[in-house]
Amino acid sequence: MFLEPKPSIDDLVQRCKAGQRKAQELLYKMLAAKMLGVCLRYATDRMEAEDMLQNGFIKVFQKMADYRGEGSFEGWVRRIMVHSSIE
Image 1: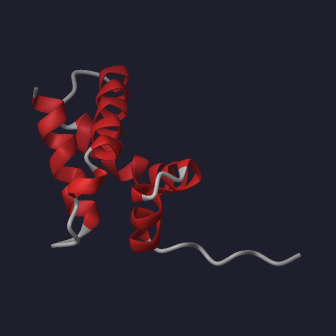
Image 2: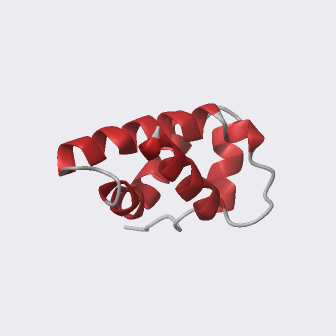
């Protein structure tokens, strides 16, 4: 049994921009735990943080074309999560 190499974030970003749903799923799985931690700082409870996380990722995928590769992708996502959480 062979394991496929883990795709890089840059590769997943390009695949997401091309509309590949599987890439969105993989990107979500790679970043969700860290971004939940961000949302928990702004939420009153875990359920609210999970809602913030979902809303934030919706915005991330809607704005994916706006990411130009300047700076880290994770930092870009984190900024969206913070803005989404304080709205």
